[in-house]
Length: 427
Image (cartoon, rainbow, N blue to C red; front, side, top):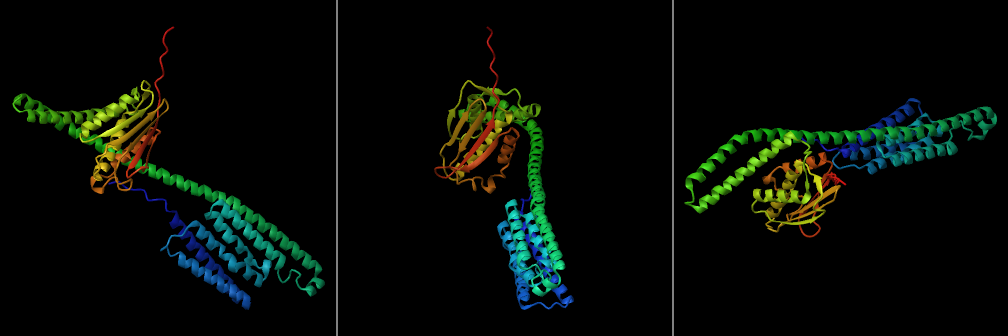
């Protein structure tokens, strides 16, 4: 009946990122092999081993990126760490820190900063800087003075080369810290915005549902007004014609008249709710409100039984919105239906607590539980949807949880109240 907002699928995003990582790794390895062949630089045995290891990690990531099995953030971070199995040794065997391919060390860090929480981004930055520092110390490059002959013949060139490497190290460290801090902050802000937008879309979808239901209710009320008026007149005529000749028929007609009156009362409440959406003048004692609501519920559901416990100042008058009564009746109906569906005729337990600031009402049933309280054939959960929406608009909330003892569900209404100010007596 209504269009549902798709869930915020973070797992699908992780799989997409893993596919991108796999493609990027394959491109990098292909470029490395292609440049080595183009420069006629035959890969040594050690370098070839780590190239094959890089290909193996690429195949593993490609296999996990198929999407048949869910991939979590921690596993994705593990796939990023797999680059350190083959990349640092490969650089050590092919030029060390002087190899231009060393800038690829920033790629896993950039991906981690853009997709992972802050702690993972900084961990990846520390690993990247440590690896680059190790290459600078132990594998600075063939021109970095590792050969004594070259160092003796070109001391000035060697010093300049080391200064160049130190500058590269400072640039790399600054870039790594900048990526871990700035890029990760921007990515986190974007993820927070996406979550907020998704929440807004869900709220808008609920508002659209409530608006559609409100429009449908208004049309239905308009259509029901005339038939109910006609039925009421016919019942009065039948009562006048039959007199007291049949007590059973009189009782049936009286019950029918009572039900018609309840329907008219519901339509009048709907009109009153439309005239005063916020129910500004509804100051009344909570105990009286509960009594009236339960009486109306028993008129609507004659088979209903309940056990009520109240704790709160009886004389305190608070502002109670008009929608609260219907919300309470909806939850009572759900509780009664759940108990009857389980074949349990135990009374519905109601515990109400209030003060001048908050109202807390707990409704407990003896049904099969929160997952199966409402059979599919008995309704679409519209009453629960409207109850949650109405309470949210009033600053309250509705919570459902399993009953502590035995099977069943506990529905808890929490609502802030506005107490009526006391009138000062004249001196």
